[in-house]
Length: 68
Image (cartoon, rainbow, N blue to C red):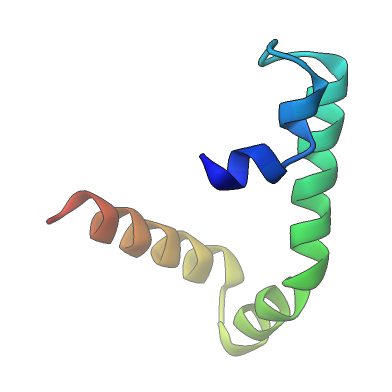
């Protein structure tokens, strides 16, 4: 709850899908990605096939979240 009050999306309005909310969400994701682009480049450089490496990493994370 505390983090939600600090996010700009909470001040836009109560509609979950609004042009302003979508714009703010997109900005948040682009900003997050810009700070973590080095992580992607490291994975891409270390892998023989980046698609398979990222797919396997995604499956492992999802599996860890589902299993207790």
